[in-house]
Structure formats: structure tokens, C-alpha cells
Amino acid sequence: MKVQYFIFIFLLFFVISCTYKAQETDELVKTTLNKYPIAKNGDESNLIAFLKESDSLLSISNNPLHNGVNNFIKGSYFNGKSNFNLALKFLSNAENDLIKYPDYDSLRYASYIFLSEVNSSLGNFDESMKQALKAKAGYEKIKIPYGIFASNIAISRMLQAKGEIEKSMEFLKLNTQIQDTGLKLRALHVLANLHGEKGEIDSALAIDNEILSNNNLYPRKYVSPFFNNKAICLTEKKQYDSALYFFKQSFLIDSAVGNLQNMAANYSDMGSMYLQKNELDLAKYYSLKSLDISKTIGRKVLTLYSYKNMYQLYRSVKDYPKAILYSDSINSLQKELDNLSLNSAIEELNLVYETSKKEKQIQQQRDIISRNKIIFIGIASLLLVTLIFIYNNYRRNKLKQKIERIQLQQENEKAIAHAEQKERLRISRDLHDNMGAYTSALLANIEKLKLQNSAPSELDKMHANGRQILSSLRETIWILNNKEVSLTDFNDGFKTYCFKVLQNFEEIDFNAEEDISINKTLTAATAIHINNILQEAVQNIIKHSKASLINYKISCHNKLEISISDNGIGFDAGKSSKGNGLDNMEYRAHEAGVKFEICQRKGGGTLITIGEA
Image (cartoon, rainbow, N blue to C red; front, side, top):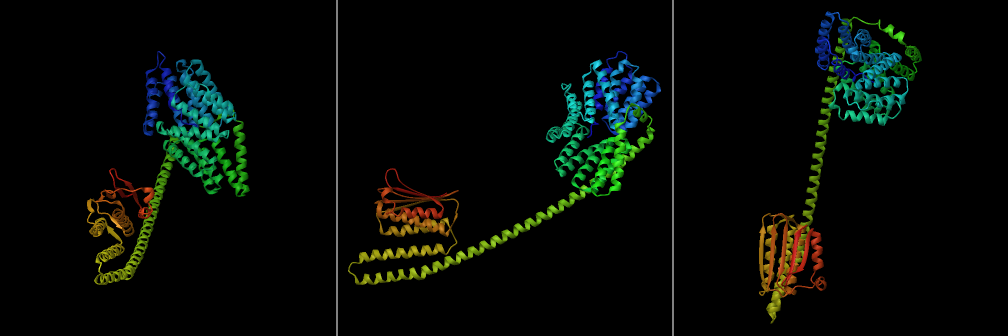
């Protein structure tokens, strides 16, 4: 996994703070060391300009101290750009130049840290360990905690490479009081790697998630390794889509800063993921991309990983000749890595290139990355437009289906309403033709008897009751003939009923109070039920209450409220419920979906209230 990013800036800052302790610090060196961190954090063009300026100024004096500082800056720069051979050359020269200046020991020890980093990248693990131990001893001698902690991290990485995981973790725990953000992030990344190698995937993910949840607090290049590490952990959990997302996040950051080593690591890890998914074409593509970059920058460990991917790929498709070729390459490179020593490292010091030639190669690589980025953005934009089109088309279809469902529902409701209206008309015709005819015949017979009978008063009452039956029947037929009844029409109908009934009971007065601000509509069924409750109440008052006054109130603002009361003798609910038809009232209230209450009034009489639930 990638561990390249965190060492550069923090080392330079604490080196500067230490070198300023010298009484006779060279002003030119001082100015150069002050400018470098600023230039390194700026644009690439500003950094190149600074390197040229530094090279020009420090080479003029031909002073070994100036040359040592200049070589240190160039070595750290090429290390960050994955040009490890040039980095090794300049850092080695810096070590030789600075050894003559004890006041700059902290800078020399920093070069040991960088040399450990470079040798690790080149696969020279023994030499990398030697440089890390030299740095640790030096920093302990001058008592600089930052340097000691950085050395411990480098040693931890070498122990990890040798497979000594527990010892590696112990070194990471040393100097935990250091609060430097860069060092802490680097140590956490190594710790996450160690958890991953121990198979403790959840522990590794916990570290990655903690950093990535606050990634806006750190420079982007510092969090790139955590994106990569999380992707590898998700690959282990077979969550491939999520893993691919985090690989791409890491790759975008690395390509933006031109870190070829970490780009190669991303390609290699993505090749391993697709190999695990058995998507062999993509596995081959990314493994070859990693192989190409790792060979270019001399990153032998990454080259070995890519060889292993290609071997497994050809073996899985039973292309044994090619599998054998990659197997031989693996064995050869593994032996080379196992046998690397200080002598082989010295030989690699001679494998340096002209600076202009290497810069040209780096620029060409950046141009390729830029073109790939443009292609990627174009494909992503096309995919986004396609998805938007598909989504809009999906929404239109869903809306069309919804409209069709609503139309079908409305048609069904119309059909049901038509059937209900047809049934109501049939019932009203039957009532008119049958009950109406019989009632009219009854009234005619009473008229005939009145002419023949000598006691017309009883016949008058029968005649009046018959007319009331006919009037009530007509009201019921009127309600049935209407699908809905307005509240004002309902109110007028009930008052008319009361006036007609009470004509025969002059001792009872009728008072109506109306406050209807919202003229609601009632369904026919609801209107019939409420009308029958009220009529039943009027009949009970006439028969049982001995009242002289009926008060009727109706109001409708937000909800419908109706009450009818009298000033009579009241009632006993336990004795009167069946005789006075109270059960029937409650049943009708339930069917109408309204509240029904009956109680005795204070001071005498009965109060019935009907209201919307």
C-alpha cells in the first residue's frame, strides 16, 4: 500500500527550526530552506521555478554546505515524484556534503529518513532499515522528538516488509505524544496496513473511516492512502462496487499531484480486485498499466505484485506457456529482492539520468494522465446525461401510469355513483307507487267516514296523521332522489316537519336557532339517519316529556353540531331507553358516523346532541 506522502513538509519545518539554533547560519541557506515548503505547497510551475532558482544560487558559491542543501531539496522533490534513482543520487550527495557541518546534523538525519523511504521503494529493504536506524540514533542524540517519531515510523515499515507485524506495531506506539498532523496520519496509515495484514479488516476500516470522515481537514494528498486502503479492505469483503469508488478517489488525487508510484499501486490493486471478480480483461488491463509504470520508476515491489497478477490470470485461463513466463519473472525478481544488499544499492546509485530527460518523461506522463482525465470526464458526463434521460423517461412513464389509474378510478367511481343513483330512484318509485298509493287510499277512506260519522274529531286526528305519514314519505323520497343534500335544505326540511307536527299540539312552542357559516353537503344516507333521529326526538318530547317548549339549534363552522332540547320532566335512562327508541337513535348515529349524546338538563328537561366525530 502507499506510504509516500506524509514525510516531506513536516521534516522540512522541524529541520528549519533546528538549524536556526546555530549562531552562524548562512543567510542564503536560511532563505532557501524557508522558501522551499511554500514553493512545495504551491503550483507545480512555482516549484520548478524555485528549484531552478535554488540550483542557480547555491551552485554559484561552490560551497559544500550550499551543495548539501541543494541536493537535499532535489532529493526530496524527486522522491515525491517517484523518480527514485535521481532521489537516491541527490540524497546520498546531500549526506556526504552535510556530514562536514555539525550545525546541520538535523538536516542530515532528515536525508537519512528520505534515503530509507527511497530504498524501501526500490526494494532495498536492508539498506532502508540501516538508514532508518541511523536517523533514529542521530535524532535521539540531539533530542528532537519529531525526528525520533519519523524514524520509528520508517523502522515500523521495514519490520512490516519483513513480516514482523507485532514488532512493527510496537514501534508505532513509541512517541505517541507527538501531535504533528502529518506524522500522525502517516503512523495511522501504517497501522491500518498492519491490521489488514493480520486479517483484522474491521480494525483497518475503522482507522480509514475515521480519517476519511474528516478528510476536509487535511490536504488531499495526505488522505489518498486512506482511500486506497479502504478500497483494499472492501475488496477483501467482496464489496467490489464500493471498492472501485474508493480506488478511483485515490487515483484522482495521485494523478493530480503526479505521484506515479501511488498510481501504479492503485492500478495493481484494481487488477487484483478484478482478478478476484474473475473479470479477466480488466484485471489484465490494470495489471499491465501498473507493470508499465512500476518498471519505469524502478518500483520492484510493485513490479512483483503485477507479475503475480499476470501469472494468476494466465493460469486461470489455462494459458500455461505465458503463466510459466511470468512465474520465471516472479522467481527472478524475488531472488533479486531477497539478495539486495548495500553493494547492490551502491550500484543503483550509478543508474541516474539527465535531469532534463527525466523531466521530459514526467511531463509526457502528465500529458497522458491529463488526456485520460478528459476522456474519463467525457465518459462520465455522457453517462450522467444518459442516466438523466433514462430517469426522466421513467418518471414520465410513472406519471402516465398514475394518470391512467386516476382516470380508471374516476370512471369506476362514476359507474358506482350511477348505479347508486339508479337504485335510489328505483326505491323512491317503489315507495311512491306502493306506500304513497296506500296512504292516499287511506286518506280518501277517512274523508268518506268523516261524512258518515257523527264523531269527526277522532277522524280528523287520523286524517292529520295520515297526511303526516304522506308528508314524511315525500320527504324521504326527496332525499333518495338526491345523491347529496345541502345542510340548509336539510335544515329547512326538518323545520317544516316540526311546524306540521306541532300544529296539533298548540301547548308546545318551537324555537329554532341557526348559525351556518359553511353550507356543507350531506350524503343521502347520512341525511336520512340524522333526520330520523331528530324526528324520533320530537315524537318522544310530544309523547313523554310534558314539555311546553322545544329548542332546536344547528351550527356549522368547521364541524356540524345539532342539538334539540325541551323543558319537560326529563327521563330515566335505565327505564326509558327501549320505550323511547333510544337504541334505534344510537344505531342510526353509528351508521351516519356521528356522535350522539342524550342527557338530562340542569333544571329539568332533556338534551340531545349530534355532532361530527
